Figure 1 (cartoon, rainbow, N blue to C red):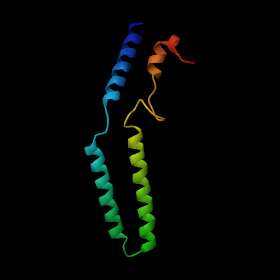
Figure 2 (figure 1 turned 60 degrees about the horizontal axis):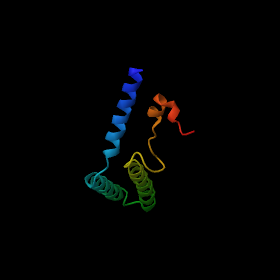
Figure 3 (figure 1 turned 180 degrees about the horizontal axis):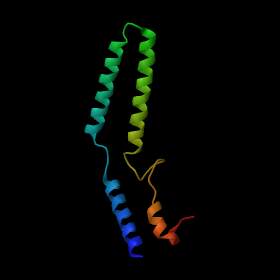
Figure 4 (figure 1 turned 45 degrees about the horizontal axis):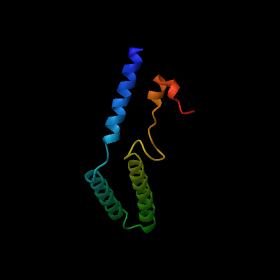
Length: 99
């Protein structure tokens, strides 16, 4: 029982630490600048072939968009469609299960 209580308290501590974390503007700026510079470099490498240029820039821009969306969706880990649930806490407190 003490082990389960310790596990629940540890899970609670981890949730509190995660809930206070967020992605600051410096990380967003660095990500977007790096993506922009890479797009410019790719465009310069493929500047002689327009079809290849458009294709590779489209592929890389899609990858950047997916990465930004993924980071933004995990910026607040306990809210929104993609969120961390209280599963570990419910395992030690089955009577509190909302089902």
